Image (cartoon, rainbow, N blue to C red; front, side, top):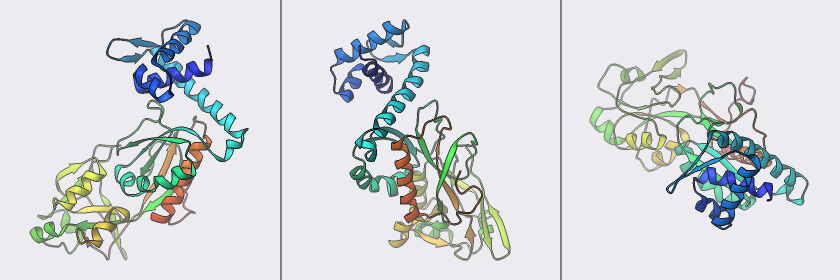
Length: 312
């Protein structure tokens, strides 16, 4: 038994939940994958997987072993890469999670250039605005906006999202244009609420004009926890939006959104790439983080690189 092949086969079965799918991704026969896992279990003298006719579940021992196998495979991959001519061509599987609007508008359209430069990197991209447990879900890194609350994570600040306030023409025709942000608190005006995954609640936005500073919470008839749905609700005229410039730009150009309170300034939202502190920063993860940073430097550059939390 080749222990490397056996560990790789076991890890892929866990990830796909199927011997058949694992065999397909590894370009092996199902029989070979099954035999490798059986031989691994025999060597370890422990059951790693529970098999039924419909699905495969990892056992408690198997889950613990899986986490260690992933580290071993990653370390081996890095060792081989660093000692070969492939050191300039990182390879392997990378699991990332990114916000849905950032994926749709910036990251995914730029991926052809990334894959042209790094054709051997396989990206598994989760697209969501939820809180991801990087350790339990075996995610290599996440891209997230806002200050990080989990101080156990390592993070690199890759951008600052400039924010503005916008509304669809259909909303303004129905409700009128508010002259002051305070009108959003106690009038007929409505916002679209965004439910932040860390708290499950909306939060107020700080706005500044000269010496004046206020926090605006607003009232809503709809709140959502997904950035693309948030934008769609605003375009449908369901309320006023706070948006990063990159999300608003296209819709401003074609008249689908109108800017509000242009004499007011909002605090920028920092954008981070975060990863587990005990996870080795592999070459493939390092080049992905650098690529995101280079991309955001064009779309949302860091305003002040000397800020205390600009890069950690």
